[in-house]
Image (cartoon, rainbow, N blue to C red; front, top):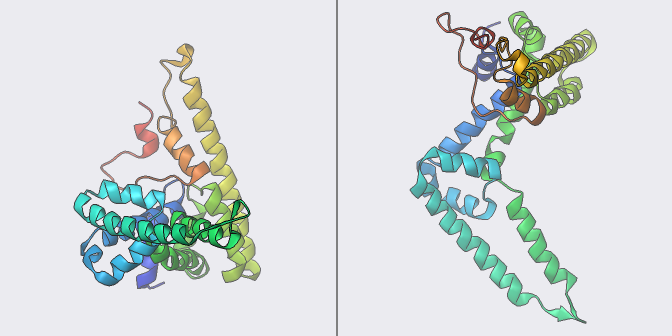
Length: 255
């Protein structure tokens, strides 16, 4: 199949196996979103107006802080704080007691406002549609690209969240024999690799027994961060491209 523009990022991720390629897709979009927010865009009035009202989720706020552009982040936080303080102060002035209790109508406004600020994110909104498109591309490639099917079937599995996402989304894009083959492969890949992860974590624990101090680590040296990806979709770094010069993770962990 001739590779099209929207299939390239998905294929790139699947070319470099990791514990959850969907997590890797999401992380790549997260990084792109942070780079955009921390670039010159924060000086644009229309974007600042949005970030003032929406703010950022915990994950993206941490990523923005690590980005290094402290002045840019401070400028965005400054006007965001102004927006929050201005609105809360106005709602507090309008709030009044009724029979010893706050008016439910006015008190509800403050709760609704704070929940909106706490649960909204400019970057999540920005990358949400693209993430959905990339998930759809996984099914497109599975249906139309035999080379991708081989990569899918030989992968390292998925995290719990994204196994469920692919399982639930598959009927939207696949049907008949394609759907049946995809679900069977997905089920096998998920469970096989979750059991592999269980074995890695178990051996990681056993290595703390003095009787195993001289035994090889096998593939368990980095078991904890990989298990965190499997269980909680925590992926901090994108998988590095394959190289003939560098040993595979399994080879490097036998020391």
